[in-house]
Image (cartoon, rainbow, N blue to C red):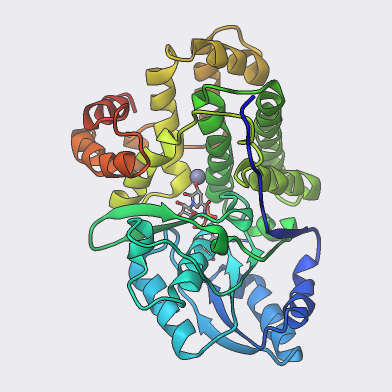
Length: 381
Ligand code: NZQ
Ligand code: ZN
């Protein structure tokens, strides 16, 4: 086991009706005005928007609205949000929505404190040293953004989807009411499941040091997601299934699976971000396709852990059978599994690989994941 330091400053509040606490939380922190950031329509349809507005009104908190964050959020919209936060001098940013809204809030919160363009954070030209405090009410559990510092944004002008994060971009408080996820479209439940699995297996399969406690912790997350996805597909209002799924999402990418491990990388995310950047596919949909191809490509290098995965997660004997069982499970829940399912031409793989190689370089993976290797992986998809 390797040495580690673990620090996570986010307070998580999870459970039924927990959104009602936002007024007291903001008032206790002496927040007098917020930039209220949300997506396209879901919070208006569910009534959550009206509920939050009335809570904020009751506490005399001034509200500046920034609506219309798209799934796979984009730089121009985030820049507008940062400009609004600056010109209205808000005290905090309040995210009400999914990972996309929250990721954009992180960009806005850091962007509101600087005079240069937000994209500099994503290209590592600048480090965020200050940010407005970020509060979140989460309506979809998938990305783990509620308890990590990461933000992923697409620059529409260059078709680049990059990430950044710093100590100041952790949400101060994230409220998760699993009941909100009852209204998720089925495909987003499926994509969320794949995303949580992806966050877990990136470390599980690639770490060169992997303590048993972490291996078992990650297997617990994988089994929980598989079981609760099936339950939620059958009965969308199964509270316990939704709540356990939500907790799995938070645990999978809040840094808890990392301590003591070593050598892990995020190749599936590195490649998927290019699919989202170029074709605007949903993150989890792109991941399902990339993961299966990457597993087929990579299994020889880590045969032992792939065999363990097969036995522990799907009760089959070999690495190959484990991959087949995972593919069958993805098909069973209705996930895409091939580039064709995403309506992406096989002839595009070189261009996708060139785009992904920029992230491969940024993430320090370019020796192993060259354009040629990424193309070879995608050709298996
Ligand atoms: O825009 P609205 O109308 O709100 O609709 C959203 C959106 O269409 C809808 N939705 C959300 N909550 C709902 C709901 N519909 C009905 N009922 C509800 N309760 O769901 C759609 C997807 O929302 P989105 O926020 O895009 O999903 P997700 O949370 O999966 O976020 C995806 C983004 O996060 C990034 C991805 O790359 C992608 O851009 N990631 C962020 C990470 C991080 N910050 O740590 C890590 C991840 O690996 C990932 O890269
Ligand atoms: Zn992800």
